[in-house]
Image (cartoon, rainbow, N blue to C red; front, side, top):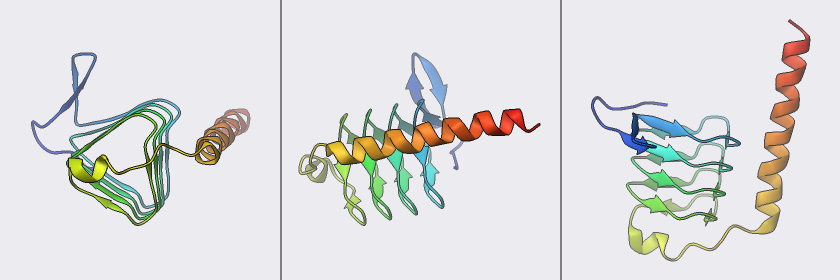
Amino acid sequence: MHGLLNQFVYVDDKPYSIYIGSHCSIAHNALIHGPSKISKKTFIGFHAVIHKSIIGRNCFIGHKAVIEGVTLPDNCYVPSGLVIDSEALVATLPKMPVEKKVFNKEVVDYNKLLVQHYKCNK
């Protein structure tokens, strides 16, 4: 994650360089560059790049996808490898398939179990 000086997204009138909502999964080697907001229950795949963007709730960003300078609506699905750098391209994206939503929930649930395991083994 990397932010920029004096550049923010606002959530509930509070400034954030990068904001990540609850129940999100950010996979290995993903890059989040601010100012950016990732809303609740969103999955960001391996090697994906989010740069100066707003990602809606319940989104799935596939592996090696690049999201640059746009706002994705809720329930948006970005297939692996796609580059989304204009609002015109955003308009072509499909809604998130049910199996991707289930996958993200499984990842989040497993991560919650890991947290409990770590707490028990202090």
